[in-house]
Image (tube, rainbow, N blue to C red; front, side):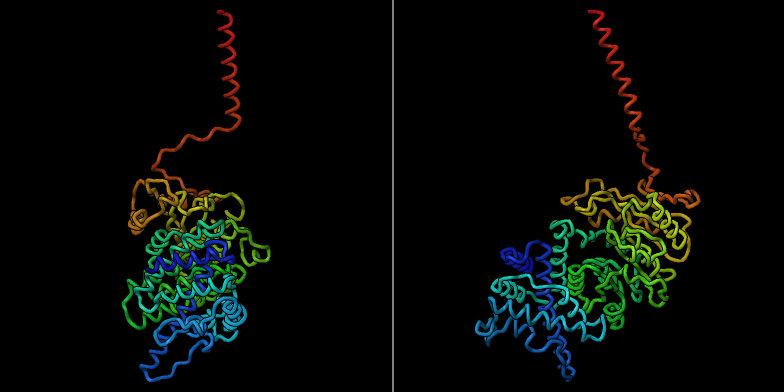
Length: 484
C-alpha cells in the first residue's frame, strides 16, 4: 500500500509543470509529509495530555492544521468538498498564507532543537513548486492515507523514503551527494561502536543516513529505559547541513526513523568552524562522508590551520578539532588523500597521524558510490595518541560494483569481523609509521599480498621501442627485396 501511494504521488508530480525531477519530487513530497506527520504528532500529544487531565496547547493555530486546510472531513469521515480548498484557491492559500505563517516559527521558537524551530527552518527554505491546485489536492489526499502513528508504519515509511533518496542519485549530477550506501554506513558504525550517552556528530549530514543508522544501532542495543530513550531522542544525534533540500530531507528522514525533533542545524559547517571550541562542546563519535571536489572561498579557509580549497580536507580538520580526547571517528574520503603530493595533503596527513591514532584504513572498490566515479577510503581514528601502525583492509567483493551490483551487508562482513582483532587475510596488512617517509607521509594503499603489476613504461621507452621495431621491419623488407 505505502509503496503504491508514493508511486501515485510521483505520478501526480510528474504531470505538474512545477516539478521537474526526482529532486523536486522528494522535496515537494517532504513538505506535505512533514505537515501530515505534524498533525499526527499533535494528536498524540493531545491524547497524552488528556489522559493526564492536562490541557494541550497546539503548536499550530487551528486555521493551519491539517484537518482544517488540507483534509476537512464530514461526519462520515469523507472529504468535505464544500470546505476543501482546491484549484487556484489552494495554491493561493499555500503560497501566500500557509508557508509564510510556518516560516515565522523560526523567529518565535525557543531554540534550534525544538520542533517549532524545525517548522520555521523547513518552510523558510522550501517553496511550493506544485503549480496546479488540483494536483496539490490529489497529493494531499494521497498523503492523508499514510499512517504515521505506529512504529511499524514509520519503519515501512522510512524504508520507502530511503529508497527515494537513493533514487535521487540517478536524477542528475547533484543527486548522489545525498546518499551513502547503507551497508557501508552500518559497517562503519559497527566498527566505531557508539554507546548510549555518547554524542554522535555528522557535520555534513546530507539526508542524515549516518544519524538514522546510528539511531537504529543504539535502539537495538541499549537498555530500554525511559531515561535511555529520552537521551537517544534528545542528547545523542547531532548534525549540520548547508544545502536547503538536503536539510529538509535529513529532517524528514530522521522523523520517519522515529526521532521527534532532530538536532540538525541548517548552517555552513566550515563557515562556523571554531578555533577555540571547548571540550564540553565536543563529541565522542564522528561519522561522515563529507562532500569532495568542492572549492571553498579564501575567507572560509582562514578558519583552518591547513589552508586548502578542497572541501573534504577542511571537513577532516573540523572533525578532528571537534572530537573529544579519546573520541572515535570514521570518515569517507577520496583515496587520493593518502598519496597526493601537494603541501596541503602532506600537512593534513601529518596532522592526522600526530593528533590521532589512525588505526584502520578501509579501501573501497570502484563503483561503490554510484555515479560518483571516484575511489574512496574510510579513515578510522581515535583522537589523543599519535599513530604507530595502521591496519589496512582492501574490500574485494569479487564482482564489479555498480547500479545493478550495489554494495550489500554481506560484502562488509569479513572487514567488520577482522577489524576487531586486526586479523591477517589476503585482503589486509599493517603499515608501520616507522616505514613512512616523513617528507611525504605517503599512506597509499599497497597490498603486499598481491603480486605487483609491472610498472608502466614511460612515453620515451615506448617511442624508442617503436623506432627499433620500425628499423627491424625495414631490414626485413630490404632482405626480401634482395632475395627477389
